[in-house]
Image 1 (cartoon, rainbow, N blue to C red):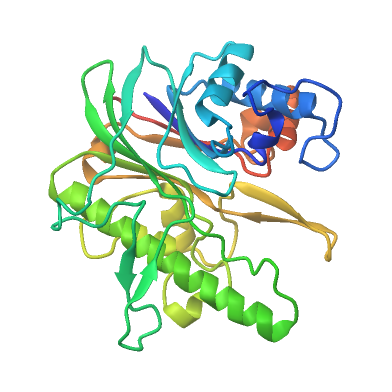
Image 2 (image 1 turned 180 degrees about the vertical axis):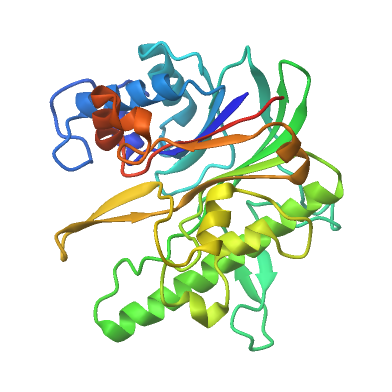
Length: 337
């Protein structure tokens, strides 16, 4: 079984309101990339990784009369992908859904959110609110997800049942702020909210682990150990919270390496151009975390990085497709299940 997480930048802009794919020479939302070029690059990448299920982060929108499931299934048909079925959970209003694109012959999957008023023993449902004291003032703050995590109940063709959660935590970037003080205030507020979302997600992780369920948590966590100076204010990153916080640990080898090695070479999954500095920044933002029992299923992680992965580097067409498709690169996990 191969699982993947892939943040596809501005995937939504490749479809019209009826879910039809644009395949023309008009510019996409990516810099100096046409819609046809981006679509073909995404199709090549998804064909190359050949996953049984892909957690698509920043999937096509399902608001304002748009249907993200239809768009994804149209895309799969256009490029003859075996991941022909799509699921979107709670719809959000950011034009960036979280969706699962999967091969129905390899895996069965359904949206299965848990929590809610009928289960007060569990963490709240992800489309509701989470109460937490964010700033240690003895007052409870109400936290919501702008992009509620996608909860999937899955079963492989061999009969293995497991839980799958796709997540896209809030970015820490101070978008819209100008001036040093405003940027600092918004950066701290964004990190505080992101950590609260991680604590909420970790509470759901604990629910599953206490129930003895196999669990995979995957997606763009917009964070990692040592990524910004504000981390020291709170003592830990959201990734560290998800790996272990009040319960049994999860595991991702790339996260483990980053935690061990604050200096020196580290794995990366995303590449962004910094206009003001005229250079690229690389970061580890995308993860696949697994429960302890799945570590016995011969897990094998891979970051499909165009420069760091030898096969990607030595395959010019794939290397270019990875750079054209998105500013993030796929992460895959092979499991013997």
